[in-house]
Length: 369
Ligand code: ADP
Ligand code: MG
View 1 (cartoon, helix red, strand yellow):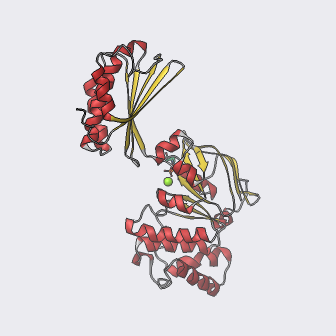
View 2 (cartoon, rainbow, N blue to C red):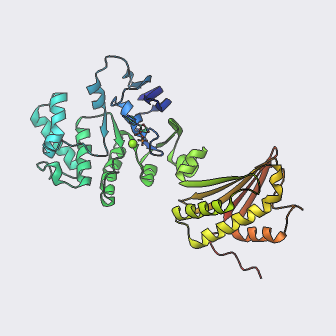
View 3 (cartoon, rainbow, N blue to C red):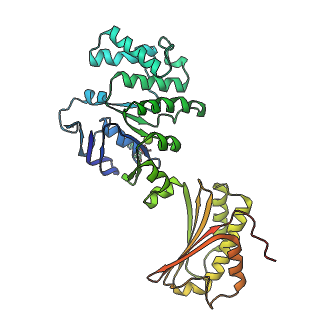
């Protein structure tokens, strides 16, 4: 239904969309997720020509809408957009908001447009609100009116740009229910959203956007449960990380500890978690110190907010064995402490590169006699 080929969009020096290509089929419900500023809105706005792409083509039902001389208004009717901020006409009643487009742009007779508008208002649960003005409605009701107004133009595709972001949490559900209903009726939709649970159960496809494009395109099961790419996984798990490179004994360990404490505070880690992490890092540094001659140690702390899993990854080029095993150890006691602070240890080395992954225990270390 929609074929996007090598779409590019720049704002000055900022290259927002880089050679984006994809196909959207009739009946697809695509949720678009990704970090703020990655170009999700720009992508939607290019699709209905609110932004003019710099290059590339968008073909909708066989028509190249990026070709010169296209009738932009009719494209926007076919691919109508619902905005975060509703964008209702405040000087018109709810009913007039729904009828003005069909009468002016589609040439509907006023009585026909009105009849249809009433039907759509009932569909979104607002059958009794036709004669109200937008300001008399709650945010959730306004957004449902905006959806009804969008439907009044009989679109083939609806583009939603964060339809619930401006709403109080109590009103999110009523809007999502309406969108769910449209999905059930087979409407083709692209939905930029931060509501992950909703994205997971309403869509048949999820785009993870990052770095100027669709970084991963998959089923909700793939994207949310088994993402194939690193960046997608970090986003889904809401992983935050902090890393240090320790080259020699001149490294500022006090500075590192202070940064780790700040990180723990930001990630709202429990006191026990924080203590275990700090002690673990200290012991890891001690164990690695005699090995720094092989090459610098990179120490990365990762916290996955969703699962509340905290990990420490030690990487060292030039080291071809497990740093927790071997005769270099100043004292075996350090390794014992490390083992008591973690719930799992994984070590691998490949072509002279050692990678030690430890998952920090969130509880007190077991009593060890
Ligand atoms: P998202 O919706 O994923 O948060 P946007 O598509 O809104 O991201 O924006 C992508 C990038 O393009 C951002 O860095 C934003 O500041 C920039 N941008 C968006 N619109 C404009 C514009 N009209 N002029 C200049 N920069 C813009
Ligand atoms: Mg946006």
